[in-house]
Length: 103
Image (cartoon, rainbow, N blue to C red; front, top):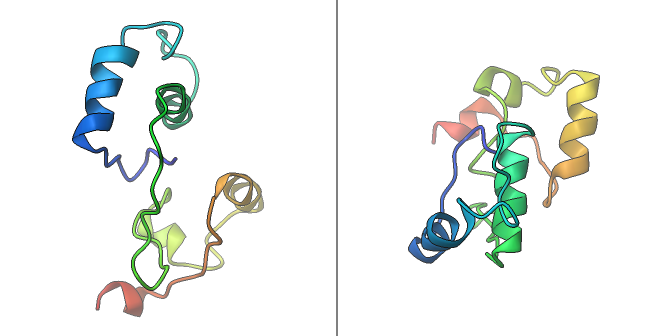
């Protein structure tokens, strides 16, 4: 789960998060430590929220953790970003050109 582009939650997932997780220290972290997207994922996982595939019908990504100038440039990723990115993605990332994004 990447927080940069935001989150899309179903009504049921949001209700679980707010009513059962947000104020429960056994489910959701209560301090400001950690990375918010990782902590959100951990919290939702403990609430048994099922993740969906947010790619389009062509299996292209719709949400990206980096700014467009980095994400759309195959040379834009720094080596440490590539390693982090590769470790945490669920679906393989295929470079998408700017032209494809403006269709």
